[in-house]
Image 1: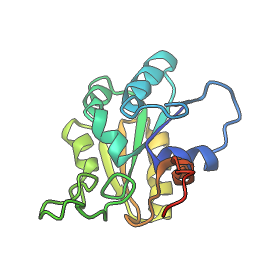
Image 2: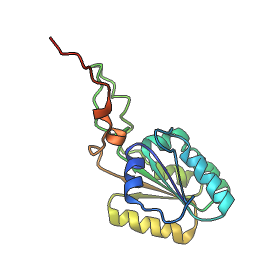
Image 3: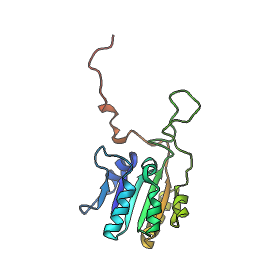
Image 4: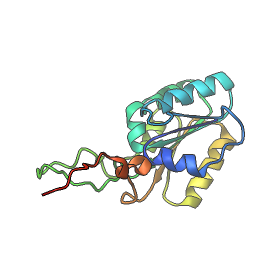
Length: 176
């Protein structure tokens, strides 16, 4: 079972991870909401008893990440992968108001989501390379233990979800 949510994380996973059986991917749907992924992961593990992989963006994970406590309490076979780029789309945005506060789309740099899972008795791993991510995922699947992989990714690589900027309304009137 694959659960998938986030902005870029959702978009990229949909285009990279092929599904070969129906009803094995649970995601928010087109223009869906964020925050349902962890609940979906818990439900999928309880109902099927099978391994669940939840691929989350750090922003999406922020909406319901405390479900890792539920995952650990019931020892569910769920591996959560949080793609951590330190923010919404990017962790490099600048506060547009000119103030000294960071932009509201920027998160705490270097957040250790893996330690949240460890705090509740699960396995927490940080992955900084594709090889480390692959190894951590294989180990999580083999163990069946509640696992969270904090996958550190390039914070400058994000884009508007769905790359729909060109679809924003444009005026038909000529500027004078």
